[in-house]
Image 1 (cartoon, rainbow, N blue to C red):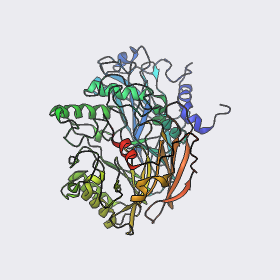
Image 2 (cartoon, rainbow, N blue to C red; image 1 turned 135 degrees about the vertical axis):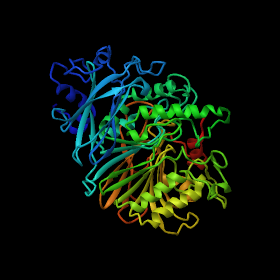
Image 3 (spheres, one colour; image 1 turned 45 degrees about the horizontal axis):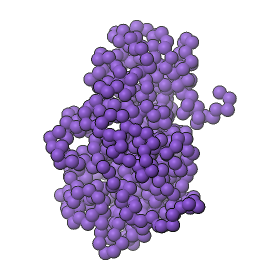
Length: 562
């Protein structure tokens, strides 16, 4: 392919390359071809009249011997019944894994059933592969061939492997902007992607409107039923940029609130009038989430419960502790928003629940990794918005569960964790911060680092600013960086340091914007806290208003919902 570099090939050319590997005249990823061999139940697959792979492919949860590969059959992804235009029968789906990017050398293959009970989704746990290397995969249903995806196995448990390129993202509101950040992330050729929640949003159209207006619309009503959630997930995956990001690398996923409903907490709905109906809604949302994500069978939902917290090891380089800060939390003590809430310090309160908290502390004690990465949803460091002697913090974040935060922080200190790094989403802006045991003592020791990604699209374009102008950074000296543009964070994890590039796109109201690095922070091995290595100079546009960014601006951006 003259003029096509490796990065562009992996994003746009995998499907065409996979199609070329199949004997016969096919030239496109979903071109009809004769099935290589008949299978039981193959008649249902041969009866497909249009491409069922409209939602793409994905891989996830890698270990040193394999990973999960996923697809979901949906020839009509926005069908109102949520079944994607599929017949109510089990459809056999062939899968193949290759050790070359042109998909010529098969190393694993098999057949999986796509059943209507699970939305015709397919989750294959591939094993017995070599550690620390790339693989490619694809699916076939009847005469149709899926796009190809790229996956990786983790290094051997006794090995560091090479440096890990890891991206993390959060908060992709389909209506608020185009998913350009996903496309640019895919072009960065990461080894691993973490999605930290708000993968999709529950609102009906014209309910949650970005400050500059919505650029596209949700289909259907607010998501409440299983059909609603299936349809909404399908609509998001019809976005080509999101599909490219899934195909580019394995993902580790956790949900936040909007995968169900805004600001829910455990068994407590955001709107008290939902009552017992909220449990049914949560059950529907969890089921659809599993159906649409590359998760292992350990995360199959059981009723209104889904075990999402888990640990993924990347050799000796990193241990990823993936948390669920929604399903087991106590309700927000003083309601949502920023408040002075003494009850937030109650030691009986937990954002993780007792079982998950004990599991996390045990993981710290057992860890031998160079980097312990805590992938979770809501802001971990304290953010006081009161410039006076009082304290006013977000009750939906760890600030609303201060004793729980103290126990977790003390846990990694007591365990001697070498490099604790918390990764966070939720707040629709880039942040970097030092973590403390005692935030009332600014001169006290720093004991960890937090990197926070902005949104993919939520709240629209945003605006650049000088991070030193943000009042939160003056009130909270442990906060080191802020930027209110859309984007993602790209990290390079090595033995000596973790380097984080805060990537931004100038606009999401139009497709195709280029990404640039707004700032780079480094966490050095054995040195807790973040160090700024690069800051792109801020050049305010000629038409920019002269008023400083205020604390209230940030609070509104984070908390204003229908």
